[in-house]
Image (tube, one colour):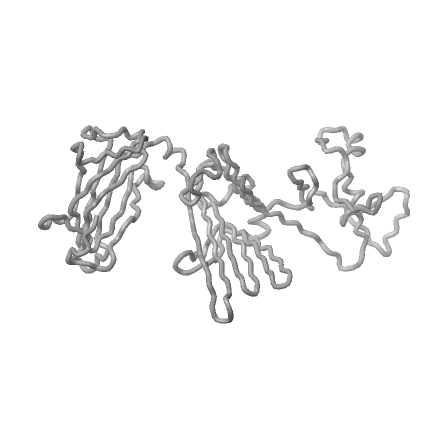
Length: 391
């Protein structure tokens, strides 16, 4: 179970010396100071007022220590107006029921596995109203400095080539010392905001984690490392299941098998208009539940190829031209492994020149149900003579 919570407690310090009453704790027998509320720990909201006043913690008395038999003189200590106790926030307890503090919940992000709707992000109205959607908490002791930043538009940079975002929506934790610096980034990039005071709960979500560590070695050398990862997560499965960097399939992808694979070959340098990606041959390998591989060419299953310029012995994608190679496993001509029993699909291509290869499937779509191609391979350099032919 992963929880990220931010609790902000505001304290008002008087300009002159005054009696704080029980606000700084109540001294009990033996000199022990306690901050725990008094009274039985059960629900008393429905009690008769005549009974409630004897059994529910009396915040007004604990705050002002007013006794009805005492003489009231406000010459030195001015009269204090009673205010609603909710202005100091609510009570917060740990998992064992021990009182922690009073305050307001500002930001809460938690993920609990395994259960449906286990990922919840809550940004209360005070997060946007009091803090304008940006909360910064910091502390230091000696050379050690710490800071926690939560916001909707945080300007953050790890390195210009790995992660640099002027409007990062999430949580950033920073540490700095004389020889060390470290940063941790966390965000639920799928629906990072909550509607009003209610938490945004999801079963399928996409999380982003990143970090950077720098170490000063001597006077002139600084060494560092950066890691950025985003992956899908499904809260109905165990929190740690397989490779955490690869993530998990969402519910829809788990129940919908892949029935179409499409490969797109383009010119990696289309501005020169020549020497683009060259396709000589293609094949498909399908693996079943037992690990057996079936080659599409061996069962007579051929792809549908569109686009490209016909050259002697190959298809060329020069300039803005592109080649589409589509394998439709729902086609009547496919007699291989049933799509519901496929564990892995591999595509073999014989390519050359300045190619850019992208892959998509019928399950790889955006919010508008359009297929999204992702790059998987590209040629080194701008080769035109076919000397870099490879499989």
